[in-house]
Length: 214
Image (cartoon, rainbow, N blue to C red; front, side, top):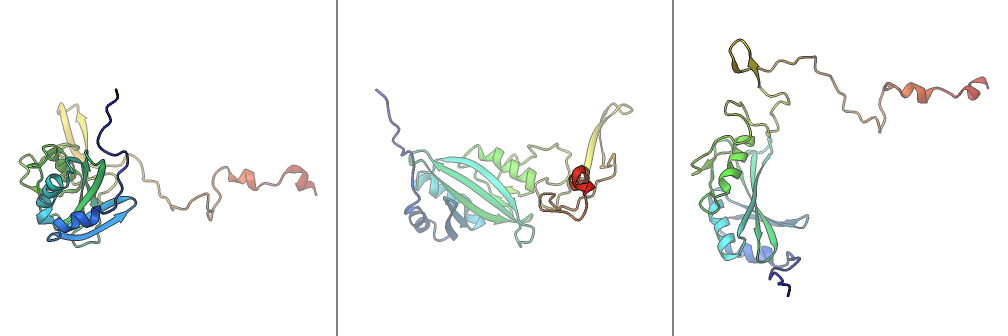
């Protein structure tokens, strides 16, 4: 006999915002539904408390992901996004808080051990620090890496490059030197039309032989 899971196959968002907003209203900045997702924006210093309430009082047991977003024009340029899932209700919510380079976000490693790795990734890619994370080291880049690659102002070529030096018999770090001149692009789409003829297009512009004789 097949055993059916108690969680529904599809859980609607009806009533979720009202139910959760009531319990976190002290720290809540905004609660919206967008693209089928329920999103709560809360105060940074209360993020651990809010996520604990969601886990214990609303049955969002699983921390699926912690992501970062960079908005350079904002006073606090970074957003830290927590994605939670309820296994018993088959439902997801997102919780966001803002941060800057000088405003650490409280760690949630006391709630979910896997948050340690996820916080390290946000720290590595964006430079957001997490107060209370006992092992906040780079996780995707090298230990000697400079900068944070997912920031909007990070150069495409990076700041340094590494190579193996036969003379020194070790890996060395050096300022980036481009092996060839950077190509320049005008960012015009050839499908929408350009002010010049692309290589090969001259064939399409040439008149057929029969038409040329006329």
